[in-house]
Length: 107
Image (cartoon, rainbow, N blue to C red; front, top):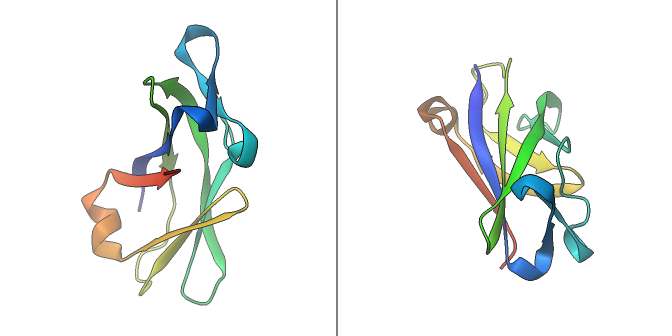
């Protein structure tokens, strides 16, 4: 199973914009930037898949990263996401199969 989605870092105080409209986290979010891994864990806390954050884009009040995570094994009861060193949301298989997973950090 393959999942596509985006991670939105909200709050203009939480990121800095770079050349070409790119952006990266600062302060408490300095670990959020292009290439940071999003890991997927099963209900037993075993890592089962991962993928990097893609190139970022500043929208003015947010910093948005696209991602693709491939080869997620089907059949798990729950899929827990971890963004870099941060815990993230959990999803059911139906949510992942519906596609376009939206993750958010910040206020």
